[in-house]
Image 1 (cartoon, chains in turn red, blue):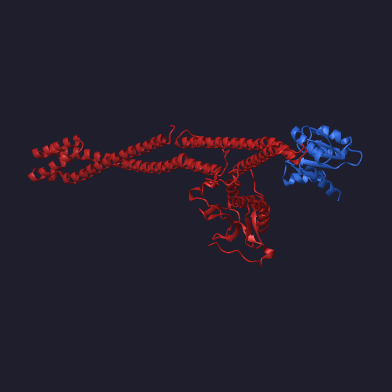
Image 2 (cartoon, rainbow over the protein chains, first blue to last red):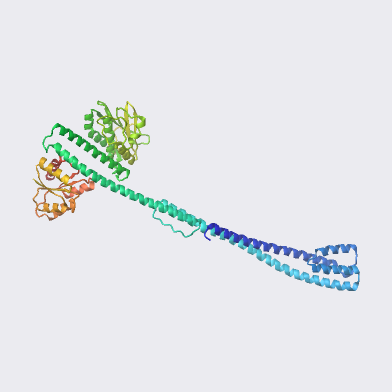
Length: 451
Length: 123
């Protein structure tokens, strides 16, 4: 029997069959017990009626009563004897009547003795079968419970525990399949599922490894030739090969600029790939955020001067953030250099810090450039997407800066975004969830609440 | 001033050699693997040793350690060139040698970087 259903059906049939048989036996015993008791009572009554042979005179009344007795007598033999007795009474011949009467009483006494014995025996039999029926019912009840518990409830419980184990990352778990029934099938199905999950995980691990290998090979193989190109160009520019004419100089400038751009692009792509593959761990600690803003602004003064754009920051309280300061600086520098590139000459780029409702630090870089159309506002954070119609000659980005910034801010648990009205400028902002005022200089002004 | 340059990438070694000779006025000898670097260094014909970290046969750190262990007279200053930029790597370079120049270097600034490092080690 391989299925729980089959075994359950078999057990229930056995149980029902046994119970029915026992019930039938008990019922029929009880029925014959009652029949016999009636016959015995009848026999006593009848004997009382015909006890005195002298009183047995033929009369209509007597014959009617005797007929009623006769019809109820069992078995046939007793009816016949009783018929003979009635006939003798009817003939009213005292000699044969006395003889008949004697025989009849003797026979009836024998019948009574026999019936009493039978009744005793049937009583014991009833008691025995009744007890047996009750016993079997109790046994069946516990048996069924045991069967269901052992073959259904316990394996399901076991399986659910293993599933929970599996859920909690114990991926190497192997399940033994002890049975071939429904629960066993469930276990083996689960085994197959687990196997598939494990093999998928392994596949993912292999892919991840391949990706890492690709990253490290790509970063080495792409950078090495570029380093030589850049070095050579740099030496030519230094004048070691002699003075160059204007045309050579122009060509050299193109080569140098494009090499720089290629290096930036490769660095950006590899950076982004590393961040996305989670191969670029953050070195997070408490660092001065105030200093970070200052350093970023200083490092971009050159670019701002070139573009004729002013850089400005609110006076900041001394504060720290839990961050990888190199990476956050990369984000801020990216937003600032974008703002500078897109600002018209003579305008100001403004850095502003505040606290939002969730008590996060919000850093905003505001420019007075052309602004970004609403349909572009999400796209610019995607890879290789820049706002349409950017014809500014200073704009020579890789198209990856904001995608990297977004990945880095995400990694810090923050948020990055833009608010812009076309024609009026843009405000790029990012948030840092973990920050605090510098304890040592707590007396400085606090940040304002964001509107 | 005579300089031993150990660098396995031919292009980089040419660029560095031109930079050091034309812009820095050094006299440069180039070797391209760790073993030759160690042998040349042990001859003590040079005033300065520039070691790339990743080289065939023996890496830069190992060359430096062997050189310092086996040289009989006063060891010459050793400067590492490496693309490795983690704090732990840089510490290892500084602990073993006189200084460290990150790769990729700018050939226009290389002689000045070396001069600065030498000055700092003397001072």
